[in-house]
Amino acid sequence: MVMRGIAGRCAAALLVFLLAVMMAACTRPELHRQEAYVFGTRVDLTVYGESRELADEAMAAVLREFDRLHRTYHAWEPSELTTLNAAIARGEIATVSGELATMLTDAQRLSELGNSLFNPAMGALIEMWGFHADEFVPRRPDPAALQAVLEASPRMSDLVITGNQVGSRNPAVKLDLGGYAKGYALDRAVAILRSKGIENALINIGGNVMALGKKGDTPWRLGLQHPREPQPLATLPLYDGEAIGTSGDYQRYFELDGKRYSHLLDPRSGGPADATQSLTVLITPREGAGTLSDAASKPPFIAGDNWREYTRRYGIEHALRVAADGHIEVTRELRGRLQFPSGSAPVTVVD
Image 1 (cartoon, rainbow, N blue to C red):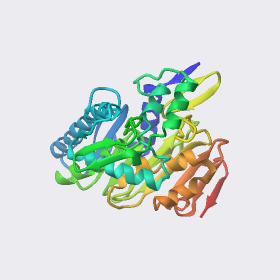
Image 2: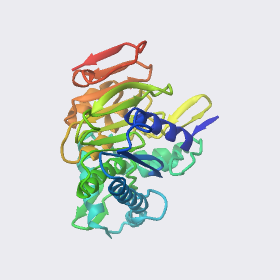
Image 3: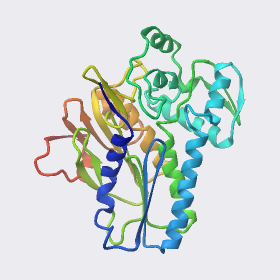
Image 4: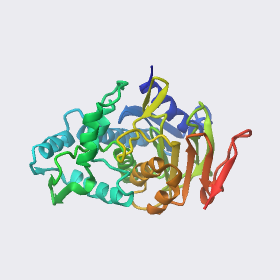
């Protein structure tokens, strides 16, 4: 029996971020960094070309916002979200903040685009698999309880949102915004940094990364985590307003009796999706790019060999998949941006 928790997630997050800052620590005093641990993962903020005072003030404001989001929308510790879940379970209509109502409306839209493979309403399944805990408990759900949730089929479309009033046609809905909140936080971070006059920054929340401006005369550059090795799978430049999101079976998982069980659950079967090791999407500049980078990586990961259909559903042309057997597939648009290390496995380019 093997468990992978906080240490593994932090190592993966640090590796993704490494190439963006590795040359700056000793030679560029205008590059400022702050780190924290929020959303169950490591957060790294980097600001370029500003005074230490302004950079520290802006990054502190971002970290305060991250802490607020973490506490407000926590899936199992007391929060506005757990209060809403309790009301739904009782068959009641709850009054929520305008922010939460907007987030849920947006999550409904993204869920529909992904044919409900992105499904924040299935918090009960996530809890059954032991992922509603800071340290994972390696266990398989009770088959009867799992089947009951599958038959109830909670979906985001079950929610009825009228202004700040939220109810559900289905009391089995149990909301978990873990596949949405990090991306939303990226968008909030960019808004805060811009309001503070910051023009060049990089925000990394456990491998979900968004770029603001550039680093001097060059774009920000980062590495994509290899799902099975402690090194980058590939590197690429990230330009102003772009965001990257990766869903991987190495981020939150446990091993039991020699089998890997990740937190990325297939709502159709109720079990972990196992056809893919990692799925990365690059979102070109658009409104809500950070949020999309988080939510839109889930359906293609779960879809397995049919992954390209789901990236198209979200209007994403830059994507990369590492299949369960380690084979790498990448869209033509993203292949032109990537640099693979020598000796890498063969890559299949898809349209």
